[in-house]
Image (cartoon, rainbow, N blue to C red):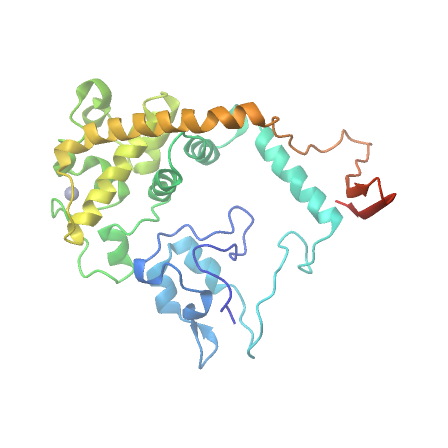
Length: 302
Ligand SMILES: [Zn+2]
């Protein structure tokens, strides 16, 4: 049970957006499967471990997944129907719902959705986007988060030893980071505006169209530097981070431009599936035609 499902790579949480685990993985368990979270004798979730590894929302969600009393093979389950089986009808309503979410006008989307869209549409490496999004959801192993989960013995910031509250402190407002955010032309907001949490800061930067990508890369560099110091690995000093981030981002963008050129020349623009207007039916077929054999193989209705 759970032996074939990877905790941080597979879709297994019982929610539609998103079925991935977003809590930051512990390095030692990064490629573990779900069975490590189950007490094999009692066939119950290991509650202590789940509370220690996942943020509150995800931990509660996992605990609601019923476990079989007997050893059983894992099976794939389609989450958009009651019986777990895929059908054209539930596939259609899933695609329609996705389309409606994408078409929602800016004014009606909530703040959370706007931040989510802005983060994932940044021109930055996936690891940078993932970290920023996790910081936004307070799903990072900051000292205070680990203390809450009883993995660390104290809740103090590793840099300034103050009582650290959240990702906002670890990545933005810790006084030890002043040298990182010292460029007043770019980051005067640091001294001028007080934010409650990391998400509020991010929303402000998005609303004001304020160097979001550079901010994200600097945040990633700060977090990476902190982890390297903690593991006694060679690390850049904090006052170099602003400069390194600018060079790193410019280099990344330059490489993307080079990578994009052949793609644009060779590929047709990708067509997205759209639901038909109301009172119309759309039937999509797929198949292979072999003119010499005068045969058509494998007609499928999607
Ligand atoms: Zn601090």
